[in-house]
Image (cartoon, rainbow, N blue to C red; front, top):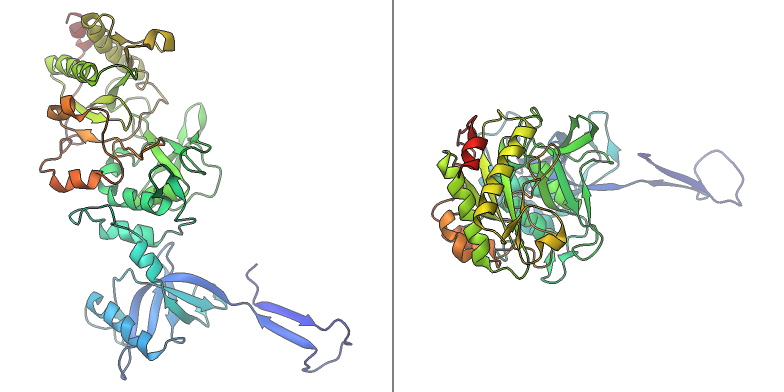
Length: 440
């Protein structure tokens, strides 16, 4: 309630003025974690006091000058001194860009959100050391300073909860995965309406899709107006990515549009979903057939694993087509491949017709439709992820793929990013593309 404290009275005592052991005042002592952004050095060695900021918005929280013993004063100086950002200010304050987190006890906040009677409790080594675990990561793959800072601002609940009980991947490790891979996944997420797969009880428990947000929006998460629907979730920054994982989001499925132009897609997808019994060779050859048709009309295509048993063939395009035309084009490509592979490729969603065949799903290319993002984990056993690959890898990649642990060895040895120019390619679907494809 933000109250300063409690006053209580012995129920048997009368009401009398003055101080008495019959009355007791207990001050509320609040605690929270703050980020150190400066310190005042002590003439006796170590630090004299700390300057701290709120973790949610980095605003000034004031000075903490009590609660230190000599050992802690010297340890804090050894941590902070190398992070000094220049000459000290006139009053002796040395600003730092530290990421060092400390627990502080205080009685309340002023109207300007400054600490009242702040007292140092301890250094939050548990957050600083475990915010980005690298147990399964290559030493060559490390989170950026921005990613570390985003996780440091995060309040991780139940970090040891196993989201994938079959392989022991915890919530903390999942947050670490997304923070470390953030530079690769965010370009495909930021500013796009999203559908999310949340698993509050981990994979194997209850799962549900979510595209609307019912709670107060976490930092870095927003909503966008969508015609004919409630506002949809969007990610605005790296903070939003890790905040959603903290809410037990495992999968990210973006629209094929940016939120500012929801009527014209800027990417198209052919989702190749094979029957369990179908050999990988059939999946690989079908993907190459899609690629060949796109090559014929001058469109560069990209391919990724889905974290399951199939592949996505994806093309980035200039947003010049409406949804109906875009889908008609993807259908035409699919039907061309289907004619060349009778008995193999089916475009009907009926499960009976899909038995023993490969379902080519082009329904991803419609208003409101989504597809799993590159680098998204999947809410299935094994903690698999959707990974961009080179066309030369398609034949050999198979259904094994990579997971949130094994991916680091691939990235550490990968010399060329097969999707390096995905976001810079500028290409338009020709006006006569449907006619050209139907002739193939």
